[in-house]
Image (tube, rainbow, N blue to C red; front, side, top):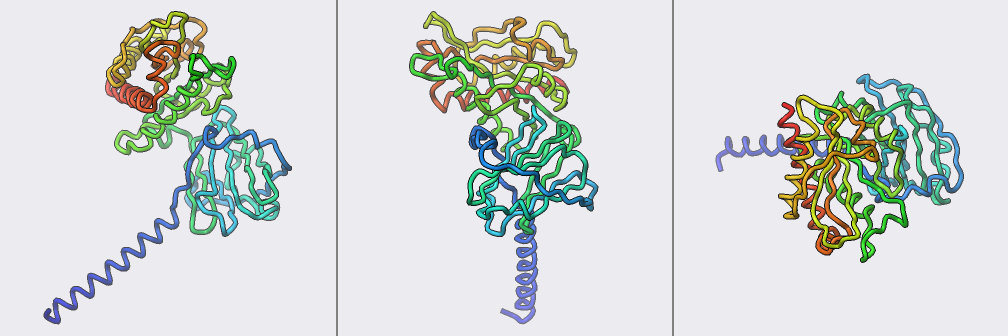
Length: 352
């Protein structure tokens, strides 16, 4: 190899090394922690153990954004942190297994804004496992990152400041006897929450369409219809979808059916049209029978009172001699989630 070629190769190697180091440093400073919810991390322990007010230190954000900076013990990694948004309660819970008892009694949270109404630490054991409970003064979306300074940075913002497409999802919950409806012990809760989880996963992986989903709840604990209706307004949702199942004394009843709001006519995308899109998309994707669309009654408050395109999709009959087996499988639920997601994308196309 000639000297000139060797010199060029050395320069290129040096440049590549600098770029690689820069990228590694950037990634280490912006590692995203795992965003999770109550379905994966039970929150009944929030009220257990001792609780105390967190220390809050006033700080100013250099970029003018609303941020919360939470210190971490040196040994804490992203696997030790779980976040749960309780949008209906204007609350953010952060679970940290910091392995240092009393850590948050000595280390202050830095806040550069006045959106915090309260900040409480719930201790879950004597080994440093805690739940940091932040009560906000309104509805805020957030994005979180684990920095290389051993802190969690949580940025708060109003949904429409960051997202062009926002959808509210309401997994229906049957609280009677744990929601068990099928002869095999399959519950509506199990189906709807699982489909909601799958729907969220699909949306998070779709970087092209960038649809933001907010969920009324992700546990067996439901919230009031009034709170759900308020969430539509506070989240600035463009659409709302309730995920449900059906039941009947007749085991021969099987298939998908969808309900719409017959009260409001919405010019860009009518409720009837949206329900039809959801029905067809889910039926086509799952291969199940489309039973049709129907106007909902007064019992469906979320759909009935919604001022945005809304639909309730029943993914099948838990009591059906065909549907019960389908609803119990992960493959059927995945196809149902994909059907709902595609219907939402099709709905946005009609609204353009």
